[in-house]
Image (cartoon, rainbow, N blue to C red):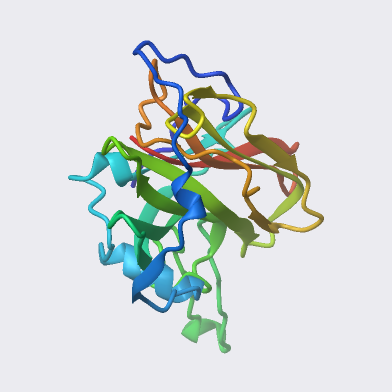
Length: 277
C-alpha cells in the first residue's frame, strides 16, 4: 500500500523563469488554419470503466517511457494525525481522442488524461445469528481496493485534463489545455467533505507568445463535490516540459476540500493533476 505523500508541486499560478533565448513571433498562428480530423475515438467517461482501465495499466500514453506526456499526481494531507491518516493509491489512464492535421501537415493530438486517488477505509461488519451457541461473526475488511470504483469504500478523488499536444514550426511540442473536470467522493459515512476549491492553470514558455506566459490561471468554487470547466481559448500553449523548474511549465489542475471524520476535527486535502514529470 502506497503511503500518502505530501504535495511538493509549486502553485500553478507561480511565475516560471526561462533561461534560454526566445524569438519574437511574427508568423501567423497555426490556430487560424483549418485542421482536418484524420482519427477519432469515442471517449470513455464511466468512472468504473476508467478505474478498471487504469488498474490494468491500459493507456494511450506510456507514463513510464513518455515522461513529457505523462501526468504528475500528488495528494496532500495537511494537519495529519494518527487518527486522520489516509493511505491513497494512485491510478492513471490516458485516452487519445482525436488526431487532426493542419494545412502544413502538422498533426495535433488531443488527449484526456485521468488520474484517480483512492484511500480505502477499514470497515468491520458483524452479523449475529441466534441461538448463542451458533453465534456467527463476519468481518469485512475494506482496506483493500475493490475492483469497482463505485463499490470501493473510502475517500476518492479524480480528475481529467483535456489537452492538445501540438508542435510549433520549429518542432517543439506544446501543451494546450481545453478542459478540466473531476471531483471527490466519500463512500464511508464516517467521513464528510465540504468547502471545495479548484485551481487550474497553464504557464510556461510559449512559441505563440514569444516568451514566458504567466497569469494563465483561474480559481473556482464549486457548490458541490464535482467540477467541469472550459479553459479560455485565449490562453497560449506552453512548451511541453513539466519539470516545474527553470524552463519548465505548470499545466494542470488542483482541487481542495475539507474533510471531517466523526469525532475529530476537520482537516484539508488537496489533489493535484499536472502534466509533466
